[in-house]
Length: 165
Image 1: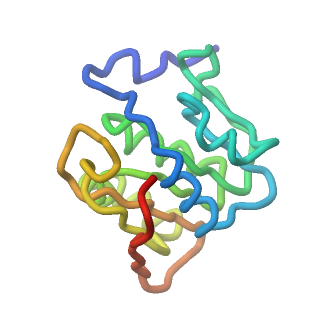
Image 2 (image 1 turned 90 degrees about the vertical axis):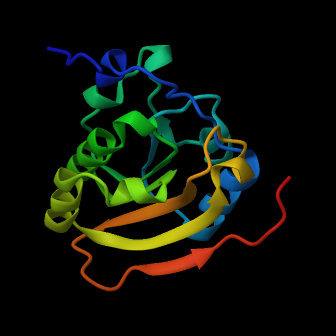
């Protein structure tokens, strides 16, 4: 039986698209390989740059919360009102997860913090500046957060200082 997608119950703007320059940097920097999933394709910026990647998109009838295949990497910009649910579901199917999110959201919810500790840990945060730098309707710091299964080392930090297209 299909679960009802939590996005259908959440108000707010969950469609904030990643600029191509940012998606390119995330892919080049984290270098995902093997079986890759883009769980919320949106306009397709990641899937266009990762030919052969599997994808989900609720607006096209492919609900991520009904996806249960194992993958090596997930890379995406998920709906911000559903961060905790996206990350926790990702933990079930993937060993390497990179989500472009407001930085504070990775540390906000106790259930996510506890789930992260059980899964492994955050290996790195790649900071992109404030939401306005990416054309997002917010001023929060935005980072690509990299969760890795069974990781227990330090959290590395890097900064994108390149040209914005």
